[in-house]
Length: 128
Image (cartoon, rainbow, N blue to C red; front, side, top):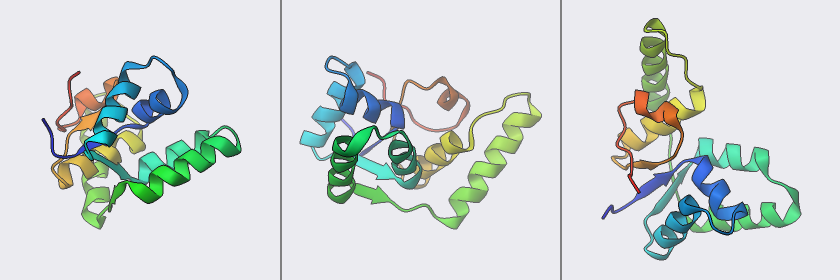
């Protein structure tokens, strides 16, 4: 069992919107166990996709009650270098995914995601 887990945006969407989502169930269990952490990129992505006032209130509640990992200056450099190396090998990934992965690496926490982009980044992934 992990001490803390950084959940990618897809897991939060599953938790907030789907009744029978496997990722959402995992998020719920991790919240009960106080294992959940957030980062600014995930917060921004969730706010960008929020549908209506109810979802915004739910998000604000989460953001005030869940630990938010800081993004250090070195994290931005690490993300840029990782993306440049991948691009030189013909693989182009979103900046947001690279930053999430580098935040996880910096803070030594795994990421829970179904996003296939993360397999190209040197981050520990939670299997479920």
